[in-house]
Amino acid sequence: MKTTNMTRLSVDPLCGVLDPKEELMAVSCDTFNAATEDLNDTHTTIEWTNTPDGAAKQFRREWFQ
Image (cartoon, rainbow, N blue to C red):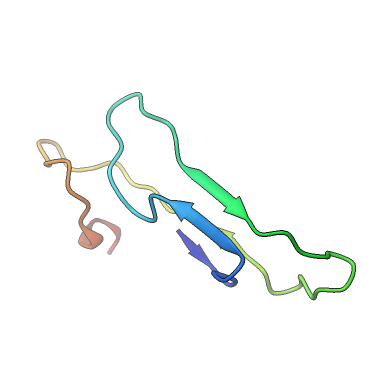
């Protein structure tokens, strides 16, 4: 997961491998006043990829390169 405001967001797990049919990733956001804060450059991106056949359940950053 990538975000431009990591101080406001928390993610569990930040990176990892899900089992087949597993579909849970928790993202929470601290409270803030949207009327007074600049939200123009606030972005969140969640990247995913299918793992190679036979890959162990261990996250590898090179899968995203």
